[in-house]
Length: 254
Image 1: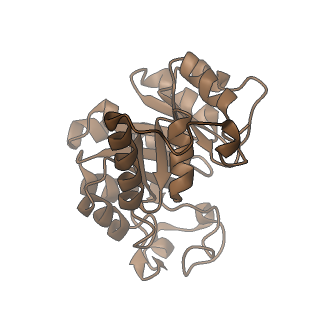
Image 2 (image 1 turned 90 degrees about the vertical axis):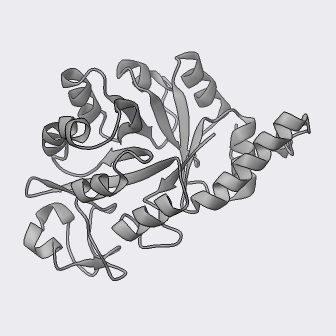
């Protein structure tokens, strides 16, 4: 089970900042997840649509200017550009870039080939996700080798069909809605299942039991320790905590 450092090591440092990325790298994570918005043609690493919930700014981020963002902070840390974050990571681990907000696909299309031409990433190390599946279709139409992941916060009538439509590497699901039908349907389509956001050990054990391929965690070191213990149990032939009855699984699984 792959563990992504969610917005960097955001349980320890200000989320989506260079400090959170460096902390994740210091923890030797195998993957990092970040979010990007378009501001005046530049992609900035920031999660929310509005600035005030996460930073000392105010208003929708896409209406800000680059000069304004340069003055803002998240818990004392500056808001980085996507390129700054990618330069820091530089192929040392996998990165999941979530395209958010208004018009983020256009600058990303320009930047995408530079990631491989100028930095030490392989195509397999860069996973691009979005709730806006049109963004992913646009990327795949130009760069067929791109690894993409539709984000889904619910259970569609056609389950994981969006992943097939996009020839996606994975489908990224909310822990609030993930269920066995979605997981099995994705796997039957040859698509990996990654689940966000997972910090509790019992959640990790349950998702491992259901065959989930990866999780996003704010505490990637703690999550990795749980995953490692599960792998050791499997290798030793020990029973999983959840292996007897489905009613032992957390109630949100169907």
